[in-house]
Length: 190
Image (cartoon, rainbow, N blue to C red; front, side, top):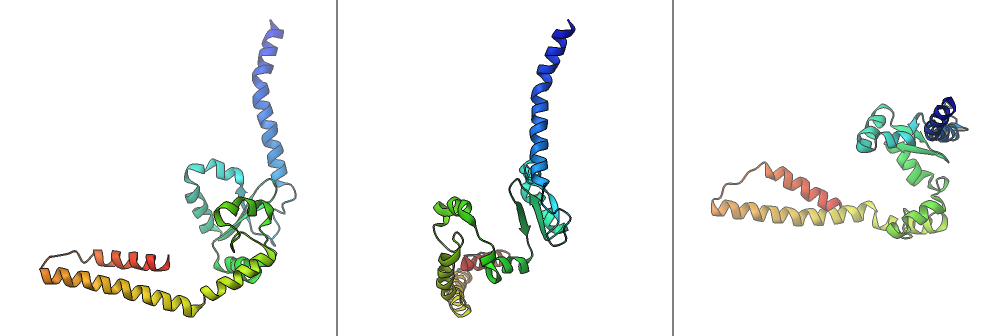
C-alpha cells in the first residue's frame, strides 16, 4: 500500500516539479551575466515574465514603470529589453548614434512585410540612404509649408461652416469648436 501511495504521489508531483525546474532554469538564464546593479546600465524593473503577469493591463504596468524611472530594462533570455520615454535617449538612439543600435537580421525579418526596407527596418548603408532621402521631406521649411497649407484649407472650411450656420440662424454648440480644431490638428500631422 505504501508503494502504491508513493508511486501516486511521485506521479502527481512530477509535472509541477518539472515546471519548477524549467522556471528556475529560465530565471537563472535570464539573470545570469546581465549586470543588474551596474550603474552604467539602466535600472532593472523586472523581467519579460512581468509582462506575462500584467498582460491584461500591460500598458498601465509599463506607464507606471516609466513614471518611476524614465528609462529601465526588462530582462529577457537572450538580451535585455530597454524601455525609455526620455526624449534625449530616443534622439540618441534614432539620430545621434543610430549606427551603434543595429536592428539585426531577426528584427529585419519580422518587420519586412510591415515596413519593407524603409528607414525603420534596415541598418548600415541602406539606413543612411533612407535617412538622406527622408531628411529632404522632413526639413523644417517643407513641413512648415505643408502644415500651413493644410491648416489654411481646414480653417477656411471651418469658417465656411460657421458662416452657413450663422446665416441660417441655427444654434450650434461652441464646445464642438475646440474638438474640431484638435481633430484638424491631428489630421494635419498625420
